[in-house]
Image (cartoon, rainbow over all chains, first blue to last red; front, side, top):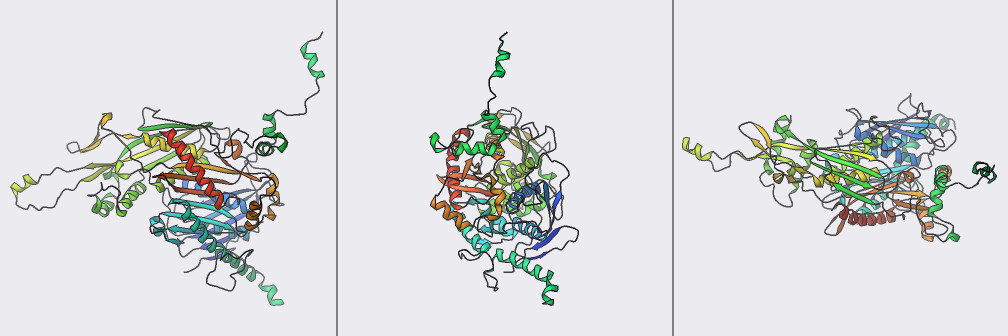
Length: 248
Length: 384
């Protein structure tokens, strides 16, 4: 299976940006982050002690509609938990995340947006890292579909996802917390537990106690999503500090 | 002169606050004091609104309140009230641009539509017709002056838009409405015996299969007339109750007028036959440590957190509150929503959502599913 590809800091005007492409589902997302910025209006509506996270999602070939408002809400709730909104310099400011869907199938009216969530979350998170927004942990997201025969498929394509009996988008933090679960379809709790187990393996690699990262650095075949995020950032840093490494 | 007015200042000003002011000034401490009373007080742990942690508010439902809709319901959960009206309008197939194309692909399985369980291909046609032709159009309005934060007659807020989408998405994914209830069929008369007299073609195949002439489009409008938290549960319950109440008039294609006529007779109208009865239950997590967000740098590992939970050391640090009211929603970040249905006594999960925090995991979700299953029994009685 071809893994996803990502690159950091593609845009020059934004504080941070990232692009993410998942060949299995076909979705490509370009994300930009500006922050911390002064927010013009609605001072009274904001919580004064922490930063406001705003997310905007632009579909590739349509005007943003009701569905985008819904997915923006999900992304805001998930990303708010991984941003240190009370760090120095962040309270009363805003972190504005703009995500443009630049590739993949168009979403339909009433779509659940579950198939898009991993790509959107990864692009947003990499852009946040690129903008140097303080994060206590990273997150890794995966999409799993359960077919009629009970088989669990990783990263189902839109056609397979449509035929699946249930779809699950699950996020884990780099410390092993279940950050987000969005499940839709018909399933029972035992099925969900199996799905969660498999998602944990995909996101964090095989269960090794106390592992906080680079276990799969040796290019093993069970490369997990957490490792992918880490590698992308490491590659980027390596390129940024090339001048320094050369001089040693 | 000793009037009561002069006597008043001699009383020393009280340093204690009435509970209502304390609730406004220190909302977090107020709720925490209710949930974990000091052991000396010997009081049970209740929420500020007097409910136990997994207790839902008093719910009532009233169907058929609006007379000029096809179906309507008012659902009240505590102080949150939602009115839902379902209006049906006809969509002629000749007005559907792609109809002749999509019909040819679905024509194969039109003949055996009344087959009980239904095959996969039929289900797919069902889904495609409802979703692609947009036969269900829910819209939720919060601009009714339902809560101080929402200005009346303002454009729909982000919350209203995302709730509308959530309801549509859930209607699609649960496949609650059957497409066959929404179809208006026409069976061309069999004129073969007349034709046979004219020419002797006489093929045994039925040359005039019955065809769909129109669809009913259901406009589902939800008005939240009072919002005190947990808008989704109330809105979804009102949609469900209104759809269960919906009656579509008998409609047929009139060949002479080349139009669709509807019967005025209420006895000829048919009710929708819905697939199951999905019930939504929402929860939120209240954390004891108000300053947790300030020290978020030292978020414990999930394993440590679990180990600590198993040791049960120290006071309870978080509560999962069912059916949060507006006050509790303002104090919590993490939320969960479970939609369940029961088939032959077996619980089926139709949607499970968890967002905005890191404390709920497998064991908690299992409990939430059990609580939602109990809530299903409760709601079944309320909806009748």
